[in-house]
Image (cartoon, rainbow, N blue to C red; front, side):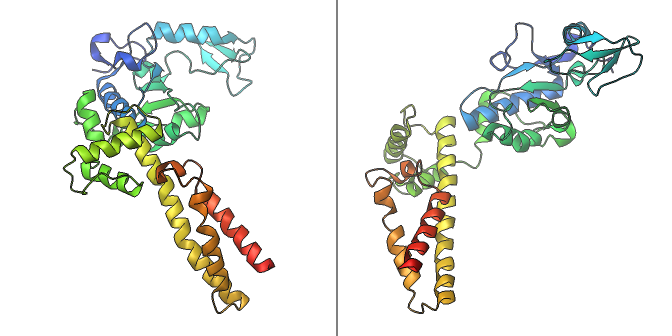
Length: 319
């Protein structure tokens, strides 16, 4: 049965987890949107180690009117004079200075129980959380089309056409496990080994050596030390691996670049590349030979190496 905007009975809605909602009144959405939000919130927490919080979901018509009249006042003009003007109850209303615009009562996606104003870092354009929501969130059906149009990074609208996870379990425990699918013990062992820790054989079986490697990583990363590769630890491991990938690709390219410079300058003996290799060879000492590679990543990145390569070439060509 179809209901008017803002007039959906609570019996036709579903709640979202209380820990994800920051208002005293119930956090409700349409049933399919609520199920998706459960899955989305668990996937977000698995990635970032913190709850995904929203401060506004379904707004009954009374709440829409209340919010609207807090922000808008009637105009004398019978026509709209500004982009943020709204038509309501036969009159034109203008937005009060310093207030954020909202839809006129009866026209909001919040009134259809399909919109959520999401925070926890999502509200900051360019943040890791915002970028994640634009990709993974969209796979769960949460679009930013309307939010981008009205200039609200936090405003997301559920569209079931984009939801690739419909029918998956909606409990937090099951969803966190699903979010980690493909990130098994073997993957954790491989990441630890690449970052300079000793997890033992990369066999997917785990064991005390793997737990000890996780504890060592957690200690040096400043995380809770429990030997378990939980959501927060996995998120840090993935971030460190992304940094390592940038460095590895940069170092792989530097040989090709310097070889080309040798040929361009007529240094057939490879003098530029050899000298640059020697200079780049001191990077571990410069950035802390007493640190594990994972922590060297805190101060070393692809941009740093690119700058060192440029300095090395200048030194050699100026000699």
